[in-house]
Length: 102
Image 1 (cartoon, rainbow, N blue to C red):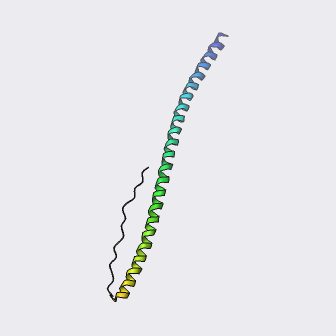
Image 2 (image 1 turned 90 degrees about the horizontal axis):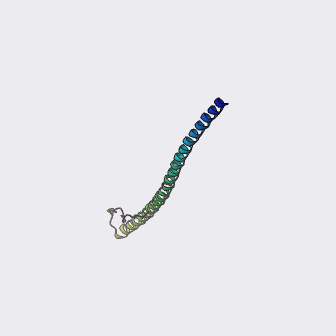
Image 3 (image 1 turned 30 degrees about the horizontal axis):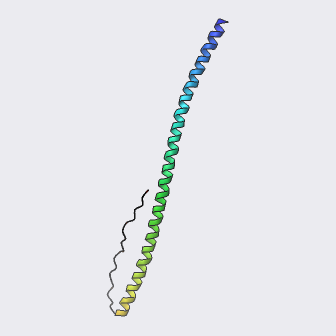
């Protein structure tokens, strides 16, 4: 009986130690997964911001292309009306850069 009791006591101590170790590992993994979730959320917000920014730039580029085409057509018309057959030099239109606050 004593040997069975000693064996069971040893087994229960081993199980308690393993349980304690598993609890610590679980706490570590939980903290790690929370950190990853937080980083993922931040990256999602950064991605959304960059997507909006790139869409704005694409829209501005499209608008500038249309403005350039219009000005080119206008200058061609003016050249035809004035009889000046030298090609007018058009320079790219620049706009101030737009920056957004996060």
